[in-house]
Image (cartoon, rainbow, N blue to C red; front, side, top):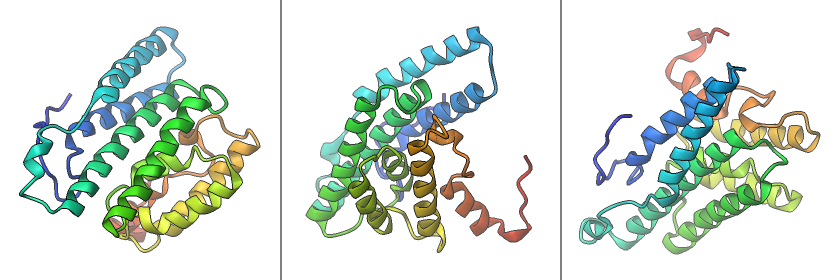
Length: 218
């Protein structure tokens, strides 16, 4: 696994860099689970997920005291909120790699609600929308099941999904609406195996940086 220094304040991901290797591992595990039926491999991947969960559950950004004096109070609030929602996002992804929709939903609900509360509290305190939290927002939003909360979640897309691609917010709303619909009708058991692909984040990156000439092969 790639080693990243514990205390780095990235211009976009803030204090979250130490979590990125775990996100990379989760992506590899997700792809492996989708492409294997070997029981021994599945058991090994399950153990890897347990190990990632154990580390991420206890993770906290280090040397937080060094932020004082380097950043104003609003920036510190947003940096800590961003770190927390990326941690929760990693826990949720790992959880859904282990348990499909309809199984262990209570724990997924807890992490999702905790992340959504963090987004709202950070904006309330700093009077600014959080930035560079698109991925953890989408991961948490997929778990919203209450119809009223889903409406509010779609409204929050404009605050929590970044503006680097003009179509990203619209694509995210479409993605969430379709995944929720599929989940309600039991058409899919895992959000990353949704009928509606690709994820809007990846889709927008392709459109922004590669344009119409870029073709993804199946």
